[in-house]
Amino acid sequence: HKLIKELLMLATFMSFTCFTHIALLPVFAKKILSGDSDTLSILATIYGVGALVGTFSIRLATEGNTKQIVLKNLCATGIALLCFGSATQILTSAVSIFFVGLFTMRSFPILNAAVQQIVDNDHRGRVMAIYTMTFLGSSPIGNLLAGWLTDHFNAPTVTSIAGLLVVFISTLLLLKSK
Image 1 (cartoon, helix red, strand yellow):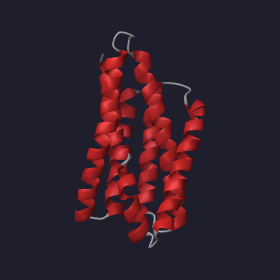
Image 2 (cartoon, one colour):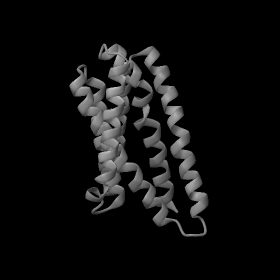
Image 3 (tube, rainbow, N blue to C red):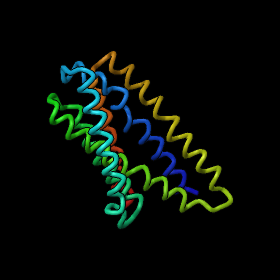
Image 4 (tube, one colour):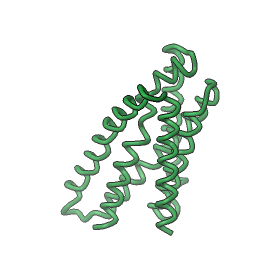
């Protein structure tokens, strides 16, 4: 099924690019924001609060074409990643990381539900196993690449590139789906 394949590829791309900031959060806290473990805790907590708000606000974001909803939230995630990558103050970092969490958590559950609704009952277990593998398997690879790139560039540049890539791909897919 072509749509399932597209959604699984989208989940892989999202996991690969949208979670790189988590691996780089200690670098942001210490080197970019000149903070300490308290700064890291604040950023991680605010990210979690954004994710929680995003989870509870999913109902508000589910009117219309599911693929377009996911792509719009993905584009917003990319914009928030760009803002986080360019932030040099704790307040702008906190606000942008809140929105990264919010839009990320508005994307993944909708994508997960869409895959489950499309797949027939006989194949749901197999397809969801592949979905889980792509979701959980590509994130560590993306984080590893982000860490390696950070050694050659810096954390804000790597995060901003990830954000740009997310915005570019999601916009391209949005235009293609209309």
